[in-house]
Image 1: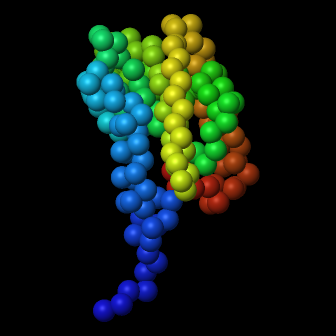
Image 2: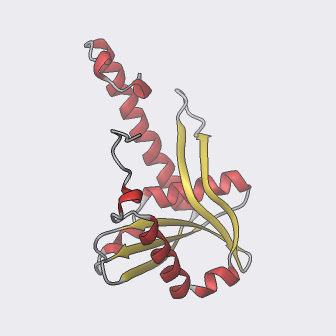
Amino acid sequence: EESNLPMREWETGGDRSVEVGIRVLNAYFKKYPRDQENWHVIAVEQGFAIDLCTNPPIIYMGRIDMIVEENDRFTINDHKFSKQLGNSYMDRLRPNDALTGYCWSAGQILGLPIERAMLNVICPLKTDIKFGRGVTNRTAADFAEWRQRAVSRATRLYRLLEQAQIVGVEASLPSFLK
């Protein structure tokens, strides 16, 4: 029986097909063979929801791609796919509230200081696969500044949501913001 459902991209041979995925993984392990030897993977796709201890309560939520231990050092790894990999791509390492928040959160989960973040950029092209990698460290001051910005942004969002309820636009908000 024929289905009227659209085919998923991985079934059609697009950029996110199984074949491209296998090609990317093979090229990645060839480019970074030491990762397999030196990394002890602690967690993959680690979800979290951590209370920032504020009033009203602010819960910081996310998903960390990978947490690894290498030479007694813990690192969070964030993998990004990109269609372009220019010289300025790694400028995204600092400032980067997502990486800082992920390091802080991983530290909360493991009960250990995690001050190192790695950004792996994968750029699959038709004839080649390019990779970029950058490593950055975070300090206690970075974590304090990140928390202050996160609380400030969430507090502003709470205020905007309160104003939206007052003027009656709640019905148009997504359900997770109500």
